Length: 353
Length: 243
Image (cartoon, rainbow over all chains, first blue to last red; front, top):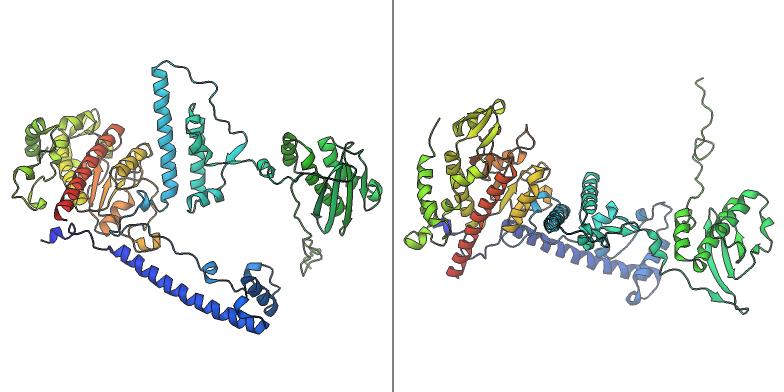
């Protein structure tokens, strides 16, 4: 009977699965070929560079490529490269369905199952909270005043982060829907009951990230604590800033005092982190700086001082410094001059005739 | 007014009363000579899943206002009251039973069943139903080509559903869900709850009834879930026996 064919055995492999297996096999063969070619190429490269092909590592390959194919292309990704094939070719997607071709995920046909499952979970949690609220009211109980959700120090995850969490593309519209749904869940009176779920999608404000990185101060022969910050950069200035505590507010820049800077503006820049933290009379600052002009130099010192002061201030002040932008590196550089115009943006005067 | 639904509703008046609560007593247990489930008129006994009274209580008989009537829905109507159209629940019951029977058969054969609903209020319920019976749901914006261009959409050869169940067949109040047309194109059978303002034309198993009220949707979900689970249970039994 033909009707029974679909029921019998269950060993039959679906067309979708068959296609998937075929693709997998194709991919494996392709990767094997690429691996082989990579190995041969590496040996050739080693011979060209006059080195031992057996001990030629990926680092040596990169060096050799840079030497043999020097490139001034601005974007590093566009420069010639030779990487192992697993890094170059995208990894194969795992099968999303079983042998009968039935998808594993119940929202598979929506195209973005993980995102919609997340929305589903949000509603599920909301309904749970509604039910709980009803129960509390029916018992005429009062809500626990101590239990509440504190979300001051955290934000919703960004779109990129959410995409990484879900392993799916999330459009702006979908992201807004997600934020709206989450806000509704959080606004419910008993939302603390699903704290774990909510916090999975919260990211702490960045102040926390310094907690582990802040260096412990060293001690010199006089027993004074000091912290040295290397590579203080701003524009084309670069310098080294050392902060000593306790001190009297002495500032030494390249062997001179604050009058190293002739103008008021750069002096204010240097003093700003000290005044902001209220430590202008309790630490000494030594800085050596080179390159750049006075703006770049003062900016570099300012950042170096702020970065070094992290070791001497408490957590509250650290948060304030972060909010004030003291701990943010200024990566702006001079913009190049463009041909056909006198400056980076400036245009020559235009006259019709 | 046509009266096609009489035979079934009179029959289930008797069946329902004495089979309610003892769903294990299937006809094929009594008559073992019925080997092929398709020979049996109601192999999974979906008749005892509901009564016309249940439909009435779930407000399935409420249609839309007179002005929005789709001409093709006329045969399923009982009449109009205070400007609102009322479905003939006897006809509805007959169609719903056919649909439930079909869904159970598809589940029995290991088919992929997908639930559709574009009403945000009922979307969660529908998704939950799909999850509970191990099937699929699509209650979101329909990206064109999911059926008609599936290989491109999913990036691989994909098995399409074997049955689409539409708990409402419209996108909004004006347009029909594109999936109705697309499943017709791809020869995927459809079950659709069609209200008085919807077109039953290209739906394989149209079920005339209210597609807005949450209570009604809840009832449909419950019924389809029960039918699908019965089909799956039988399938499991069959596979165990043949192994």
